[in-house]
Image (spheres, rainbow, N blue to C red):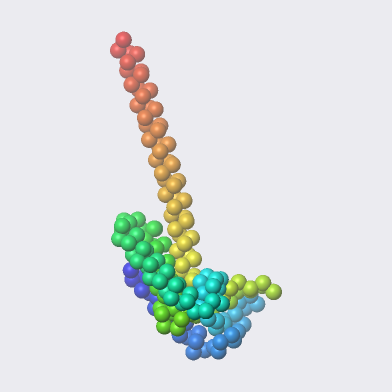
Length: 175
């Protein structure tokens, strides 16, 4: 849980710095492909439903609260699975960081902007980054779990075949 709290703190501090240093829509070039900017997203990922009449603030706040509750439930249920817990912790910290924005401001504060020539990736923040890394870790954890399950099934099947083979040999030698 300390990692989730650290993520929330870093996310909120970075957003406070962005708001104190930039005006809305301002871009500060850092590299030929990256700018700091200050944008507000009242919608979800990629500004989904951002142009609605305001109801989405409460809808996405509720979704955030439910997601955090579900993640906390999964974390209690799977206390021994370290990789799974790390993934959930990163998602939890990011979700909590963005939830705080929705409650306090009615939108999520975004300030990281990657682009190349005319192509722009939607602006995002540290919370979004940790949610993404957590989601990737969840996928990797599941792939590794499936691989272990398959390997265990093959080992178990080979053990059964070996036992059956030995049992048949013993029957033949006794007769």
